[in-house]
Image (cartoon, rainbow, N blue to C red; front, side):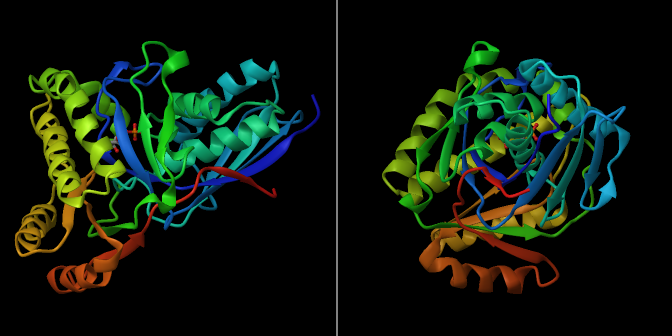
Amino acid sequence: MTNGAAAAVSHPNIAFIKYWGNRQDDLRLPANGSISMTLGGLLTRTSVRFDSQLEADQLTVNGQPASEEARLRVSAHLDYIRSLSRSAEYAVVESQSDFPSAAGLASSASAFASLTLAACAAASLELDPRDISRIARRGSGSACRSVFGGFVEAYTGETDLYGYAQQLAAPDHWDLVDWIVVSSQEPKQVGSSEGHRLAAASPLQATRVADTPRRLNLCRQAILGRDFAALASVVEQDSNLMHAVMLTSQPALMYWQPETVQLMQAIRRWREQGLSVCYTVDAGPNVHCLCRGEQAEQVVHQLESLVPEARLIRSGPGGPARLVTA
Ligand code: PMV
């Protein structure tokens, strides 16, 4: 094989209906389906260059050599892509994100979506977005959703072949804004890979998983009908359900910080006062505050006066993962 190179960009996503726990850990086949919005305001760019002279894969993240743990995870992902292209060449991988990694901002989603697209192109594999989504899922479960733009649903997938995502609605379908309130940039203590493994230890997980089709349906209908009140109700319930599982795993995971709770309570209050706003929290302390585009400025004023120290990142629905010139 010739030395192939390619680069791709992709956005992280915020899950409205969250994936937590795997039915099969090695393949990252999710225990439940999920729905997200791709976050156009944040970007990861990943380049991949296969080189027959290399003796191992190399990885830099934001200009720094990555940890051995991260390099091995990327290398295992590339092994699968190499098995598809019947190649044994190692690669130089460079990944750059414009937002803090490992703080519950789904950096692994955009990292593995852009890595998968770039690596498959560099390996001259001709695959459709569904295949890219399926392969990205093997690197990070939520990455299968970042392959698509707008509003996206991921399926549980009985087998590896069926574990992929699909677009529900295009980015311009609904002018929603996610204000990400970055109150902590500390890397989280327990990463989501470990968290997924702990989920089954909570007695609440089976109930949460069994109820997921109902929440998926409510969320799908709310998005398609642009019904913010219905969306707010199911998004907050879903986030609380996932954190209830985390809090009752063994050992218990508590991602919330005092500001997380302060913000969740304030956002509920603002909604009671008439603002179209709701919260959702991933595997980290930072709150995502969702609102209608036309109320985004009103909402940011509220956030600024409540948490003046926090960094606020605005994001609307973004486009799909795409190749860029290397
Ligand atoms: O893709 P992972 O392994 O980082 O898991 C993502 C987990 C959550 O962000 C908490 C939920 C989700 O569906 O994105």
